[in-house]
Length: 230
Image 1: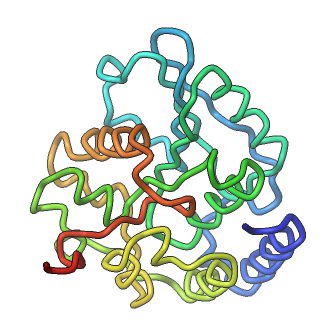
Image 2: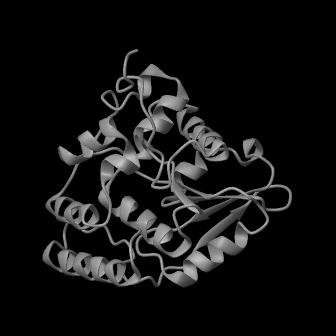
């Protein structure tokens, strides 16, 4: 598990990278100052889903949210105060906080911040990953078919910082991790080419989280292409 000192040092490195690549840094919070944005569904809060961008949530009609769901928008560096607030929202439920983000260095770093503060059993990655895309059961969302974003020089340097904290393959699975390590980021918005896919990703993430089928690191599980033949 990532220690507090290692986490702080990792964000300090990213702040320096942002200074070196000002035209490629997209303005995400690197100081831990940004407020959380909270959207509450119907019923008493029981499950918390953390996302890094509000746009994908806008594609998910609130009328189709499961009862008791709270969605938190949080990006960039997350502090212990952020994590404490998120944990308080999840206090009424028994499952882990479900983190749904892009397969890119910034979102993985945000997740690792949350996991460092809450612990691996309380925060799990169910974003763009082999496990979640497989659970959607749609051939059009195979990692190899999705439109990927080329990582910038800032992103590539940031990825090295993230790799010092965690193995992307453990978090993402081998296929999505392979794309990332080859300089391609897979974002939730890549699923917007067809209506209903973004909500389907959120539904698949929540379903996997409720089963707790992943290991303590994230959403990794054997995929169709990597399961051993008997």
